Length: 51
Image (cartoon, rainbow, N blue to C red; front, side, top):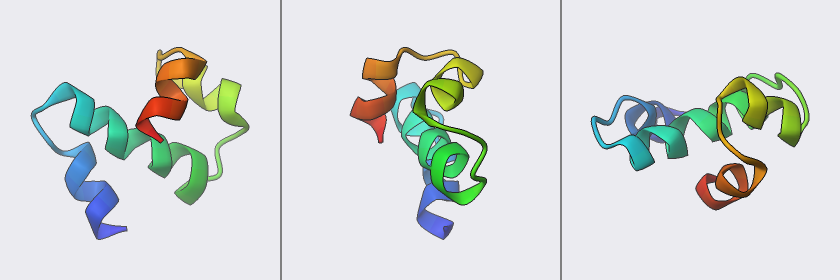
């Protein structure tokens, strides 16, 4: 959880997305993949690349 938080706080956009996506999909359990992708304003392909 600390590693995901550190990634989400990164100033690099790709790293920040790589931190927000696992948090939203696994830690927070906020929905299925397309709901999480839509909520974070990324495509499903980007979602799976970052995941």
